[in-house]
Amino acid sequence: MSQTEHDVIIIGGGHHGLTAAAYLARAGVDVCILEGRHEWGGALYTAEVTAPGFCHNIHANFMEFLHVMPFFQDFDLPSLGARTIYPEIQAGIAFKDGRPPVLIYRNDMIEETAKSFAVYSKHDAETWRDLKTKANQLELIVSAALYTPPLKWNQGETPPSPLLPAHNLFSLFGLDEEMAFKSVRDCIDECFESDEVRALLYRVAIEFAAPSLEWPGSGYFFLFACLVMPGCWRMMVGGTHRLNGAMVTACIKSGATMRESSRVRRILMEGGRAAGVELVDGKRLMARKAVVSAIGLKDTFLKLLGEEHLSPYARRRTKNFKDGPDQVLGSVAMALHEPPKYKSAKWDPGIDRAWYQVVGYDSAKDVLDYCRAGHCDRIPELPAAAVWINSLWDATQAPAGKHNLTGWYFFPRASALTEAEWEEVRETYNEKFLTLYGEFAPNMTRDNVIADYLHTPLDQHRGMRMREGDFGHGAMSLDQMMGLRPFAGASHYGTEVPGLYLAGSCTHPGGGVTAACGYNAVKVLCEDLGLPQSVWQNPARFY
Image 1 (cartoon, rainbow, N blue to C red):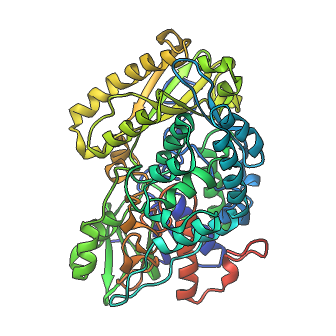
Image 2 (cartoon, rainbow, N blue to C red; image 1 turned 90 degrees about the vertical axis):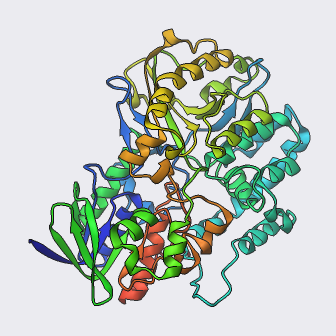
Image 3 (cartoon, rainbow, N blue to C red; image 1 turned 180 degrees about the horizontal axis):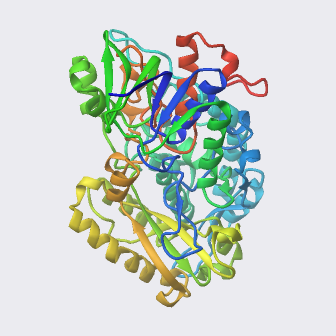
C-alpha cells in the first residue's frame, strides 16, 4: 500500500478548502488538498448545459462579498483572471398587470432605490434611505462578524446565544432590539408598508438562506439579507468558474499540492488523533499536523471518521444536524434569442436591465405561499423564480446577439421526492415556468427559447455533493447559527478529535461564496500550529 506524508491534508476542493490551502501553503506549510471530483471550486461551476456558447452558472451566481473578502484581496485574484462587473440595477420585480416595477440599485445609488420605492410608498422610500445608509456604514462591522471565528465554547458552559449579536446589530440600525426575536416577514412588514416592496424583499430574503420567512427568531436575516447584501452584488466576467480558476491558481502559486479525482474513503486515526486519510484507491496520505475537512458535517463525522470515534454528544448532535430546506435550490437555464421584455418596463425600463429579476409573483402573499411549499416537502404550485440574464452585462457568456438566462427555483429537499418524481419535475417544470413567464414578459414564449435545462436538488446532492441539495451544508436555523454552527461543541473549527478540523459551509458563517469558513479555520489553525498571525493579517483591514 503506497503512502505519502504532508503537514496538513484538506478534504474537499470547494472554495473554502481552496482558501485554507492557499493561506497555509503561503505560510510554508506542506499542504495537500484533495477533491473527489475532476472539478475544483464546488458550487463555483459554469457549464454549457443548454446549447454551445451559452454559459450558465449552475449554482453560485451572486458574488456579494468580493469587495470585503480577504482571499480576494490578499492573493490579488483580479490579476489571476477574476474580473468583476458591478451592475447598477441590482434587483427588480415585475408584475403581471404591468404596474410599475420595484428596483434596488447599488449601494452608492440609495436615492435611485428610494425613488423606485416611492412610486408605491413615500414611507418605504424614507425607511430604505435611512436603513440602507446605516447598512453601508456598518458594512465593515458585519464583515468582521463573518470573518471572525465565534467564541470557543466548552461543554458544561452556557451555550452562546446567536440572538445576542443580533440584538446589538438591531440597536446599531436604530431598530428595536427585540426585533431579533421576530420572523423575517415580521421585520419586513414592520419596516415597509407597500405590498410590492414587501414582495421583492421577501424573495431577496429567501434567496440568501433566510430560514422560512415566518420562523420566529430569524430577524437577523432581515438585516443581513434585505439591507446589507442587496446593493453589493458583483458578477464574474466569463462566469463564476473564473473565480474558481483564480483561487486554484493562487493555491498552486503558493505551493499547495493539488489532487483532483481523489475521493477519500476514510479518515485514519492513530494514537487517538486524526493522522491522515485513505483514498478509495487504497492510497494513504498521512498528515503530520492536521486533517482539515471542508465538506459536510455528516459526511465528515459519520462517513469518513466513523461514529465510533465520536463522543455520545457529538454523535447525537451530528445525526440531528438539519440539512435544508431553506437553502435547497433548483437551477433553471435557458438559451434565448432575446432577453425578457417586461410589461412593467413601460413605467421604468430599468426592469429589463436589472441583474436579478424576480418574476412570477404578483403579491407578497404569492412569495409566502411559494416559500411555504418547500418547507412542506412540496414542489411550489406557482412556478415562479428569480433569474439573471448575465449576457446583458457580459457578452462573452452567449453567442453574438443571443442571451443566457439562469435562475433559481426554491424546491424541497432531494429526499422529499423519488428519482422518478424529480425526473418528471425536470421534464415539466420549466415549461410551466415559461407559460407563467409569458404573462409578465410577453416575448418569453417557447419560440424565444433555443434550449433549456433544469438542475434539481437530487443532481446537486449527487454531483456537487451537497447533502439534500442544501448549498449551505446545514440549515440556517437558530440552533445552527454563529456560535452554534454546526453545534456548540464544534463551532470553533477545531473538533473533539485531536488533529481534525472543520472548514466547510457547515461552520460559521454558513453557505454562500464568502471564503469565510476556510479563512476562519486558518486563523484557528495558525494559533494551534504556532504559525504567525501575519499569515492572514492585512494592515488594510481589521479582520
